Image 1 (tube, one colour):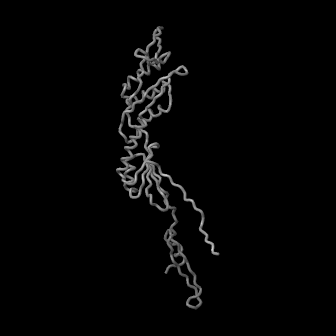
Image 2 (cartoon, rainbow, N blue to C red; image 1 turned 60 degrees about the vertical axis):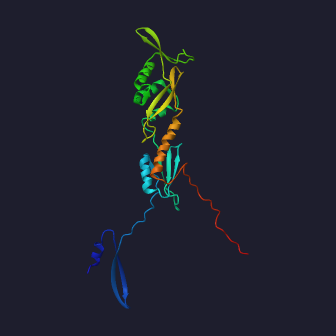
Image 3 (tube, rainbow, N blue to C red; image 1 turned 45 degrees about the vertical axis):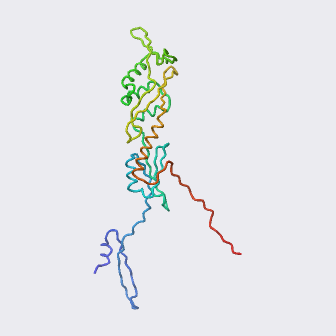
Length: 273
């Protein structure tokens, strides 16, 4: 028989020993000590947080939906935001979980996309072309770098814009070699053809970028414009959306999910006259 000391000191880790003292047993005076071991209390854990994953890989996003969310899922494709959101269970009564795919601009296209935001000085444009000349397929990227370097190194720059068959269109640069001043017209191409993927996971495609030059503050500024770029990006996004739809043939639509709260007017009260 275990002693009181043994009962108190040999309790397994995590369990609790409880001693009950009884002063009366079957109507007769006396003292009886009983013990019992109680298992440890399991703490109440919080409910798992709702899933709000964001995927950058369209194939991984489709595979995830195929495994975890195709039965009652509804997918919303937003071309403007280049984002696909999936409500995992549209029939859920207590909560909705939404996971998303966000298309990422490809690193090879990112520097050109930054130039489309506004005018940039000729030197900064030359740096972008020099660092990404392999993406320029027309004209030749290396030749374009040499041409722009010649302009940047000149002592005086003047933009030439004319009309007609014999008009001068380009940049008149002035250089000085051994005391002799020389003027030379550098023909700048009207457009560039950039070959690069627009989004991660997508193949490279050609994008024609129009090139505009202007003289301001004693220097030359470059402005790029790509009229067909928006169409190309929508086509690329649509191809990614089609891949998700093929992997998870649930309810698919163009749009974006939105949830609102219910309006309550209070409990119904009946009056008995």
